[in-house]
Image (cartoon, rainbow, N blue to C red; front, side, top):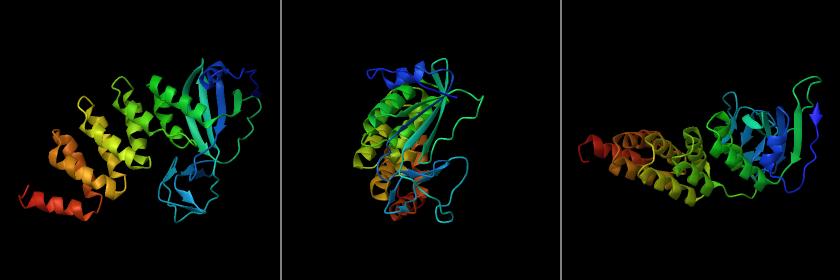
Length: 261
């Protein structure tokens, strides 16, 4: 059954979720331009004029965007939260589609309806900060596709904070690498260079840089491969340069292999 909650306007989204009975909590919010989905297992991030780019996520399996045609709806973002004792234990993110009516006699489903994108992002980032389990890491991605909210400064702050759960920091770095703009690349570069950041977080930042456009990411990766003090971080930079098929990377490999480095 679907329960209804009597809520005051001043109540935060986190408080509304915590007040829900055990079961599933649903909410929706607006997706940023260029994001669409099939309401089930596919979310595409670079869609314009009916065409989607290569940044397409398939949950539960691989996906070839050139092989399968599907209806891609521009939102909303739908979150399904598993809640026990006021605590979010897991979440699923969808874009588009429609909610299916809960089965009679099944778990309680509380639908909070449409919420402001800013409120959703604040709730998700707070969840990421305090939860060291699966839900904390899963909260990062939906925050990045909310409409009219710039999240990369918050992601960079999460990635740099050694008090945050490691899963959350790694997810923050990964999605920071997917964020548009030179500012995200600068933040990732600073993260690689920052003293006191765990090696695995630095390596995730190196991977994230490899996902940036070559004009942005390759020069940074070459510098890291040449100069970083940690040999494992240098090795990761070389590995991802090897995947880039960029002539500047090939020139670096030639320099190394011919003893010119």
